[in-house]
Length: 210
Image 1 (cartoon, helix red, strand yellow):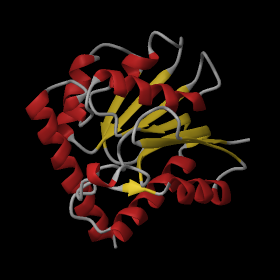
Image 2 (image 1 turned 60 degrees about the vertical axis):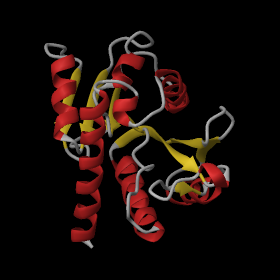
Image 3 (image 1 turned 90 degrees about the vertical axis):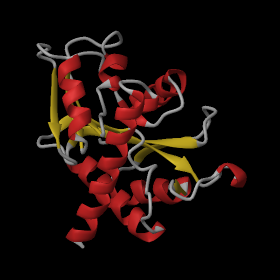
Image 4 (image 1 turned 90 degrees about the horizontal axis):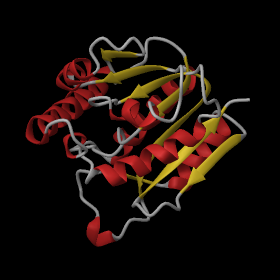
């Protein structure tokens, strides 16, 4: 099981390192279509944050740190911790924010400390040649990790199984939003929100801890 998990993560890291090399530090460099849709995703994910100041956030799959760019003009006095499997992504992030004491980056797939909030944007989309069952197991393991490493709550997004059939790609993973909503309600919290109304072929789930 551990070997399968490591293989999955290595393939994903290589995929995103390639995107960064091809497109640079941009939305396309982390495999999004553009900055506008990226900002819209960040807006949904950030709805889990109920404090405007003095909070910390773990950004799992942080890429080059675009989520910090989104948070910076909207919140004061917060600490940002970014984690990514791609060493190239983390190197780019560290160069972008060199000397900024509010940001911290590490090459890993797991936060090394508990933060007030956990966020995961786009990390469940690219399954490559993994089977549906293997990838769903990976998603659930990662959600367990987000739960354990967040104090106030966490949020994540997935491509939706309600996508138009002709637009779906076999190397991407399209999750059932009702399935993951039910899992989060049963496993993590009574306070769970499913956002599926913001115009993209995806959904966001917010899990707030009491």
